[in-house]
View 1 (cartoon, one colour):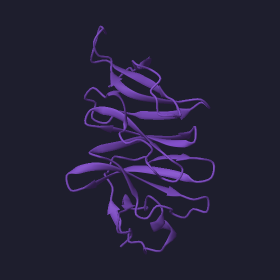
View 2 (cartoon, helix red, strand yellow):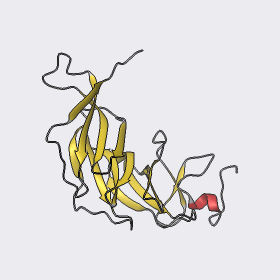
View 3 (tube, one colour):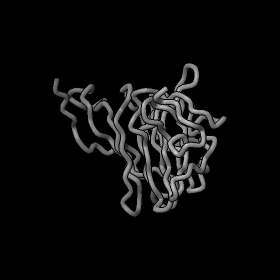
View 4 (cartoon, helix red, strand yellow):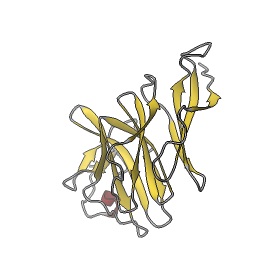
Length: 193
């Protein structure tokens, strides 16, 4: 078939295969990835790359990641699990570590990952609620001193319209410390229909 790819083919060593969205599972076989989770989050440390995606196995989605070296070869076979019952949204590199952002049980969370592919914290870093938004947009950037994680959220209490969508953000230090107790309100979103 058009989306059948030989296991040792370069395309099968990448995170995605053209034709049908697939990822490499624990056995090195191509496994289905949750449709609608694209684009795959990616970041580079200047040498290699980290890719993270949402995958379904059974009933719950999970976030997985894999690294690709400078030559384009897959480093992590099998891919590595970041979080259960979660959906990936963004990735960045800075301060000596990758930051993978995702939503999990109505919370916006990030995981720090070493360039060697090791999760650096025992628990994910919880940034706050996504306030019931089924698939909030998220972005992560590095400014040389801290990561800025921005996500779509509801305005909440204290707003004239608590259901209004905003862009909320928090800064994360290289140590994993959250630098903002309350989310920064970067923008109000206007929904047109």
